[in-house]
Length: 427
Ligand SMILES: [Zn+2]
Image 1 (cartoon, protein in one colour):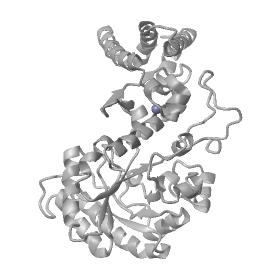
Image 2 (cartoon, rainbow, N blue to C red; image 1 turned 60 degrees about the vertical axis):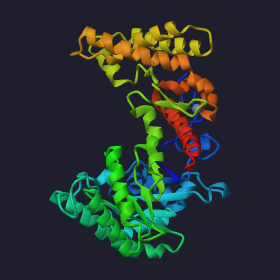
Image 3 (cartoon, helix red, strand yellow; image 1 turned 90 degrees about the vertical axis):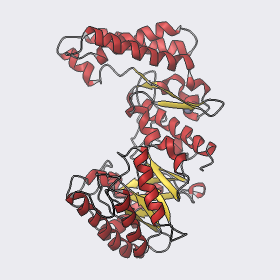
Image 4 (cartoon, helix red, strand yellow; image 1 turned 135 degrees about the vertical axis):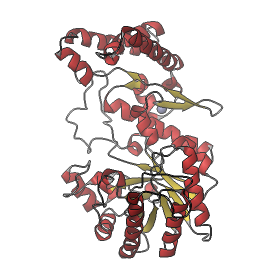
């Protein structure tokens, strides 16, 4: 099973100065920054996925600047992502349209010909047909029954665009593999879509709309598609936007050839509690909470409290320095755990304060946080991790503070995730 990392310009500054919280001197964003495979020195994935909506164009701006989008289309995805050269020659470069970004529109803003042009310019090895997300999921709907009018329209639009896209994609030649996207409101409607795509000539199908689904529902959807394509021995499945990355082992029983996810990276700064993970000697995964010590001058919540006079700016900065200092001293073996926790919690109080919260609820919150942080600091997982990130930045990787630490923690998670896949024998 191939693990494809969905990139959205997730790079870090290799010369970032953590003590002074500054970028390397005269750093040029993107040019001096490093993607996960650059800073780790190897790719912890089998390919990268780039969404057309993330690159953007004149009609539909994305995350790339205009010169970046132009360079992407001129030089191709591999060169742009610095994912080129002989050792990455067999890695997949997968493209999709980024259906989530236009999900509120009645029709996708892209057509088959301009999408084929985008895939051609980017020199993608694999490209998904243009799809429109169906948000509804009814496991009990039979045949083509059930489903709102909107879901049915999106189902039809997705198939109609897939048929036109497959025809247009012939222009890209045999080195390009078109992937047909399945969208549906029930396992049976998804099976129907899969059979239609196979009849059109697709042999690689991507199952979309999985992001909000629970694991049980994902099994129902994948199982229905798997069954529907069983008549063709060369047919295979890609799981699109697979957010339940830790549960991928359960999907080995189906004909899943690949999946894409960003979740190991995202959990570093989006998950409420499980931001960093590391397996023990027995392969059991342990999850840790990153320690929030935001920059006092940049945190919106803290700044507001300074503006309204509730907090004193200098006092806040003193607390920030004390928290950082105590955690770093603990990491060096020069300070004790309780002092570090005291300083961090002292700085956490204003961070969790709100005009409506009672003293008791804030105390309770601090107690929970303290026990989560105690576990993180006490176990010092970054000392046990051998990845280039943890070796290089030590305790900074566990601090929830700015993009250079948060994304580094995400890249550590990607490295760990790859090892986890290898241990499961999935890669
Ligand atoms: Zn690490």
